[in-house]
Amino acid sequence: MRTLKGDNIYIRALEPNDLEFIYCIENDQTIWEVSNTHTPYSRFLVKQYLENAHQDIYEAKQLRLAICQDEDFPALGLIDLFDFDPKNNRAGVGIVIQGEDNRNQNIGSEALDLLIQYAFYNLNLHQLYANIGCENKASIALFTKFGFQKIGVKKDWILINGVYKDEAIFQLINNHTSDSELAQ
Image 1 (cartoon, rainbow, N blue to C red):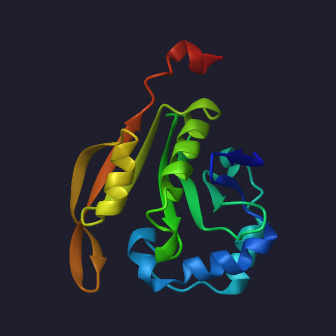
Image 2: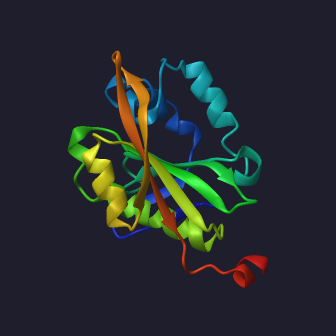
């Protein structure tokens, strides 16, 4: 996969020159709560990660993509398929947009739409899911906008600053796939 283009953004595979962006985003403590990060990452570890980012989703069981506006601008965020399970045709979805000024600009919506289309029509997935903190109203609004439904709540699931918080699981079923389509 090279790039997936929308009207205002595109998502693409990670490149070696994304090192500083990923280093900054992984070490931004303000988003650790939503990214499930617990410790800082060194540039060395990020470089090693990028060196292995060429692995196919079937090998790595995940796919991390950069969200960009155009060729002249650096990445604005990351969108992931994780826990890729080709036997059961499902994967988890995560998204993070760096910087308050880039949020509420429809960037996340367009990126999520592109990823859903890719997951359902290129990877032939039957379902996607997202784990979202119950207090994360922006992410809940984003995912429900695309038809993700809350299917449960994991009580006291995440420990943040000494306080346990609930996490909801949202699921989107691809009703356009059938057993005969997947067998092809």
